[in-house]
Image (cartoon, rainbow, N blue to C red):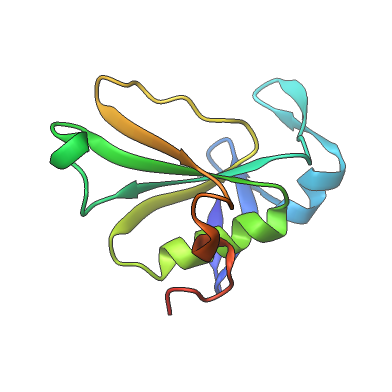
Length: 125
């Protein structure tokens, strides 16, 4: 994902090629030698919490959050809120539910019911 001017607007495929995010939401696209259709139903915003990593429940592991969103608009709001917090790094918007190795990552899946403030625009400014 490419973050510029406060919005996620591009998606990197391969090493050099960028596709506008609006384009891939409406069509199939060619990725790593095959055609892929992006699901419009769910989006996942992932991030690493640098403050909570390696201690407490995440002792010896990275603390990761995965926020499930029903639309790209909500995903952008969650991503922008994460960007506004100094303790959140590695922010990504994904179209497939991510998997992380549990031996090195403490992962918490969150949604609008568990953390409603994350889905409010500019909640952490």
